[in-house]
Length: 211
Length: 320
Image 1 (cartoon, rainbow over the protein chains, first blue to last red):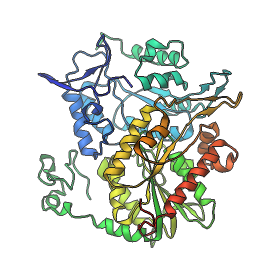
Image 2 (image 1 turned 45 degrees about the vertical axis):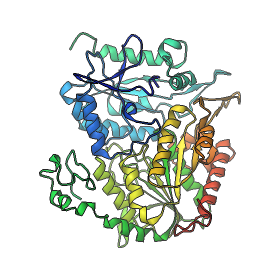
Image 3 (image 1 turned 180 degrees about the vertical axis):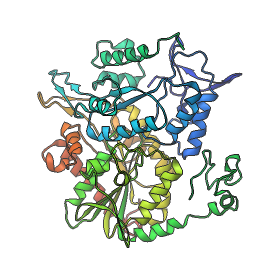
Image 4 (image 1 turned 120 degrees about the vertical axis):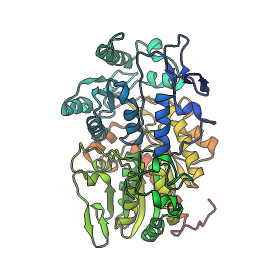
């Protein structure tokens, strides 16, 4: 999604060097994707091996000076989630962003994710409702493809902030497919204001420069 | 198996019982003696249990959110429309058990009988099992590591009294990890007919499907085919089509051609699908004229045809 497929991870004195995704070197990335010999190789690992790699990603990568470390996780409440919470605990994580789609079936699972956060002492920064409506490019009619309202309802039920809804946006999907910078390339696209607003809320949580 | 330590090297590994993290584990002696490397007796027990199950289908996806559970549920509904077909739906997504909700069975409990756990019956010919039925609250989180999840899957396969079943559909979480390995390993002696892999049209999703296909090859799991979900959207107002998830690299069709894997069908996005699932109703019944229903029915038929070419005991009539 960030157009750095096929890049290699190098070693330096302080550890693994993450891959920079932009010229300005403002965003760096680490992923098991970089460690595979072939892109279609399946990573068929049980829990303990996944846990070990996640620990390494936190302790052995030479991240350097960072303002934000964003950790993308798989769905669920299992090995990966426990491993990353354990590994990050000494570094006082700001918290968790919990993403859902609007329908009840999705919210049904994400409720459990919120319980997980509570149980492991991980603060919830807020809930984001993704794929929230689709505006037809032909007639501008908005259809709630995956129902509506579930994210806000979930946040209310769990007593956590609702950060916003992001609509379905084929331009965003296409950007991710091509590894393009959606934020810079398509500021007029339907998803942009929502994403910007959510990002701003997070920036307000912990202004850079204060520890 | 007791709770295993944080960094358990795995009971089958060369380090079993010998690794640093094995110190203090109650199973250390067992693993060090090599007993852990012996085949799990449950595999034979499951083989026996599965003798009354004619066809077993695994529903897989590389990615989350592509509609796997929705598909599994509707495959079950579709097959069970024939009241002479006995269908069982097993949900092994231990952390995200959404099948009870999609099937309209939230809040149901599992009962024990002399012959094991009873599945929850939606219809006389459609039984469902999920960890969701074992949780007391919709907010309960299942925060389990791999070994405990594997134990649950073993129990589901060994201890549930499925009875005489024509089709056992196993809904899985996304990925290629503990749950998938366990399902394949525990069913190893019982012969799985094959896997149906769900994707959406974009390359980001297909990338993960290719890994899933490789997983199937690795564990010698036959592939029934791929279903492309969320394939185009017809606006209810102007009836024009949009590609919400653009197939920038040709979608599942091109991928399947390249990998010589059957494309079972493409299901368009219909907002009524999500609504039906939220209500726990069969979309096939709620929206019988939807192009998505027609697509589902065609796919279900192809799956039945694939299964009918395989004898119940795992012998192929036609070379696979």
